[in-house]
Image 1: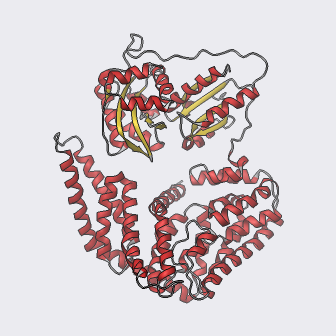
Image 2 (image 1 turned 30 degrees about the vertical axis):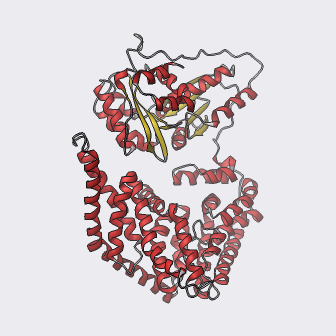
Image 3 (image 1 turned 60 degrees about the horizontal axis):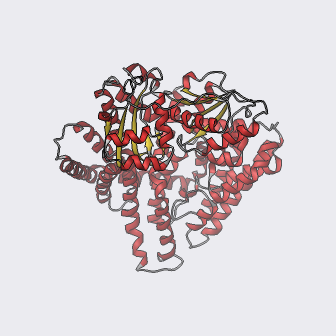
Length: 637
């Protein structure tokens, strides 16, 4: 258990590092191309244009990393403070490209300003918000820049020098090929980002400054080992694995998506020897022939490798030979393993599921090449009578999704029951279960016999229409009983105990982060007497599980399943945010805070879902000038 937690922790850390670097790969490539073209030993030596190289690697790239790292922690405000702090570490070590320093100071700056904002939340007098926000960012950013200049910059510079010396020692001792013993298995376990972007890229860029290229950029990016495995399956595999290998090889070699070959290795763990020895032979070839790149090759495509290969000497020959040798060695070992072991058609499906469990999410690439590997373990059921939408708590997103599909089911004349529930209480007799992508593995574990469908947008998913079409095609000639659809009840009726009141509708709000918006909606529920204070924290916890953004600029924050005990009575708060607030890359302009008890909120939530499924209606809600106008639009369904 501890090993599993450690592995997950390292994976998350690696993913965080890569999330700072990957969005800026285009800048790295631009710098690498300018370096390859215009330095004195480049394709077209140009002293004036060559002046771009130094400032780009010393200032532009670290500042981009620091900005991105800060934005990951605390949106735009964190990005600004993170950039200020990163400038301090850059100037504090002017002779070393501060990529490691940027990876430290960018997130640290954002974390500091985030904590400061949390401390003063609700304590600033009206009219002084902008003054406090701007000066706090400036003062804390400046202080962190000084701290980075005096302490972090020199420390990171010294640490980088130690790492570079270690790599130089490995090269001189001829031991660098042994790194493949760690790197190749790490790729299969999704730990490669921690190694590649956290260590190899910063050291490699330092080496580029000294030698004009670095072999480290090809330790992980070499597509040869994976290509050899896929070629082995093309010639000696069986069933689905053999059929899918050619497509996977194209995506891997030209697209640079190494993840595509991981399931093939997992279905035959002995193939780890193929990728390890393939990687070692490739590194040995690079050392022997003097290969290397001037910038990271990301993704690890042969095209990306060609783009950032330096022109001097025999670099192209060395790099391409290393890829060929790694492929050949990996292929030979893969052929031996596959010829000497028993293979089954189902192995690749099981291996892909194992890979996705390790990764913690579905693999869209594997779905394209190995569609049967990522589908549910059961076939599409016949004579469907029950469809269940499931989410963590069963009170928000699943209820809205169920409402929309229930409407489509009725319009199609299908007598199918559509309900919603929490994942922990999915009925065992469920035939079709629909969940958000991140929650699908949990739902599959709960009811493995059901047919599972993943969606990323509960309000306007194309999966609904596909499902209706399939159900219509599969419907028997026997007339099915039509289930009556629940109609949305006008808010404010006596039966609904006034679930949606004008005083709980807030017009023209502005928020810096989704956490701030969720906290506002939650506090409104508290003040209205719908929930206890602890429910607000549970709303934030629910958001960490998977986003409550529904699509069409709508979010519906609510508590976790455990938070239901903090609900006093069902109720809603409606928060209009005309400029929008970021919900994991999406802009939410209408936020419906939800507290549900005993299902009494579901009818109004159903009405909200139907209204918000039409983007024009959402636009009308966003443009509304009063709480009454918003309620009227919702009740117009």
